[in-house]
Image (cartoon, rainbow, N blue to C red):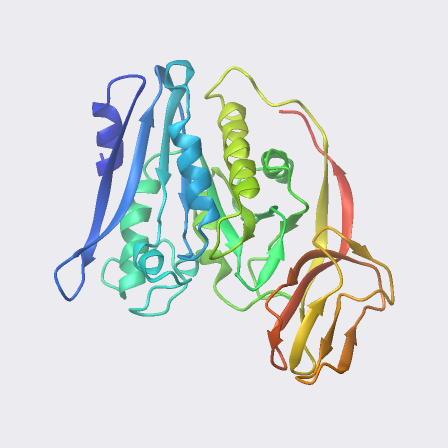
Length: 339
């Protein structure tokens, strides 16, 4: 048994506990530890894992996960729920995406390395708990603080995983997302570089289990409507996997993104967005304009094809090559299957 599975086994039915997973120490001797909350229902059933703040500045997920687990009706719940409110504690304390000790993106490091760099050791410590138990994993994220975005879903498809795409899309629909994006696990046009297969949800899928990401707005600030949206979605996910009787409604539709890309500035200056996330821009309609430091327009950012705006930059200060938008260039309305 692991620390968390042992803790769950020792909990009385319909009760909640908390603890820490020690992953090392700082130069002053302070613990590097991952906090967790474990909740046990009144009867046996499935286990739901929720990880938040894998990136340390993506705080909406932390509040959504805490509100979800602290408001569970444990007397009516079957199974268990484990919430990791700060999966990257060093980055969380630094209010940064990555830990200052090594700058590694922890969501490209799973399953981790017991003898590796600091972030790899934290990933290993968490993964050794997660791989032993759990039927479904939800990884809560946000975009960078520079952007405005409505909540949307991201999912990956493991080539050897038995989880069907329709299952993942149905789960994502519970979060009322603006879109659901399939993220390639190999280098693809329009995606940021990195080891995408090192993500915690991808590695969980490799175990043959359901896992996906939800992006809850922007980073480094709390957006309470999106916190509530995330918490409500987690409650629906819990019901969907059999933890509660009130299963979500069958079917429904979702906008599935087929292609997406980042939009970058061709010239430096001050970017002024002319749209909001969820807008569909027709050819020639502006994502926004860039002015020089004197206020004169030096670029009008438009597209030759229709695009769906996933996110638009709200920090106006940009240099050539900075990201100013995130758009879908192809999408479809997907009819979802019932459970």
